[in-house]
Image 1 (cartoon, rainbow, N blue to C red):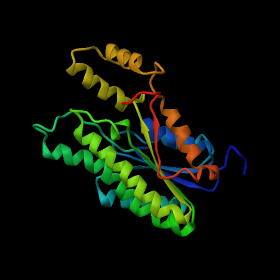
Image 2: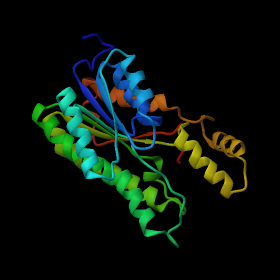
Image 3: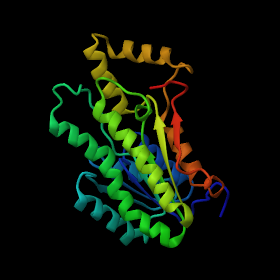
Image 4: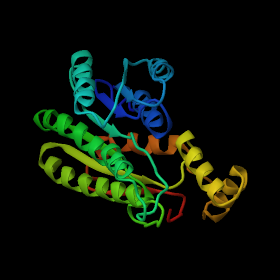
Length: 260
């Protein structure tokens, strides 16, 4: 096994894997030599599947609804049937929402919690036992700077991401004696379609153009830029190294110095 292909023989399963940070992690794992399965509800998986296979590994792409226990079970079963196991789990499926507590529709609150938090719970519950039995596993959950910083108009999102960090810590402790690490990555603004769509909503509510809103966001960032998806992919790949096993139960912020 070459140093560059240190994940040869490993299998990665990525939720929200067809776009944004999920896609970036899936491609990074493939570059590392892992076979990769991606699941997505909102983006076409065929293009990302081809990109993964172009890295010389096997790929599996399945429609996935992380709010459905049956859908998550079907995804997991397909990965095990095709690739035999799951060594790496990356939970990237998520949504954001602009809404104050006052007037918050209950169904939207439950939707955000179900996707961002319960979706990760469902996949971890299936993948962790096998990782423990094989004494090797890496679980990476996408949280957010919102897990540590409140916002009057994002209570469901902030709550869900703070809970993802708490879940990460519990899973890390359960897996620690058995060769399994679990970490959260908390990005700030990342230049993805989801991020731009959210910024467009914020820009409209503040009476700004999207271009002006993005420019102001960049200028307020200490590094004067937005995080790129491949930066998240590179960190996720590093966390899979044997040398990184000691990094567990952590909430790793990637925000270019920005609090949000």
